[in-house]
Image (cartoon, rainbow, N blue to C red; front, top):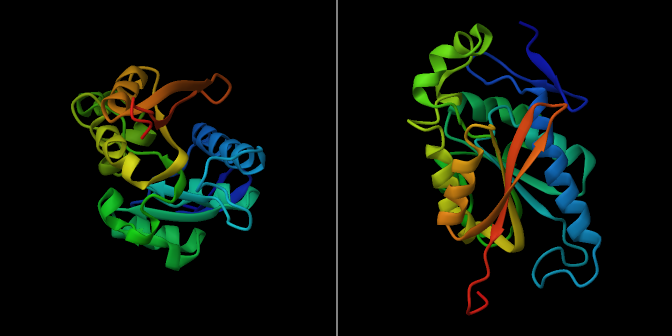
Length: 224
């Protein structure tokens, strides 16, 4: 009704058909910013990542309103890009982020190829509610949020598998994938990352009632 929502201290423009950002998603922002700051300033940074004079590069996948990307950009030196499949969400995100850095398309297909292998942090708040569980959600979500922003497929992690599956091609050396999930789906999200050649861990915040998975490319026996 207001046309905006408060998120991480920012006024985020939202509209009909666009998922309203929740406070729990602030954990995605906190983790992304922590990674950016730690990696940029630690000595002996991984070659190719966080070089002097080069801003860390963050991509907000399934960006919706672009709230996560906007919040990361507001408190870090990161250069932020965002992408979403829904043109309504893309139009909204272009109000919250530099419009030329928001792209429309299916996950990585939306991104410029110039970003491939250069992304320091991939953040994703993709749908993770199992299809059959949507009917049991609170009415403010079930009845008023677009279904495409909720439905994660039969077990809730269909999009997580696809995101994890493409992450290695887009992450820079030492890069991280940070995905919002739920306590019920967390183990499945970890499994999706591990199946894609990533090492993953679960991070929770009880105050925010938030659960995320943080993953990095595994190093195989060849060191690649």
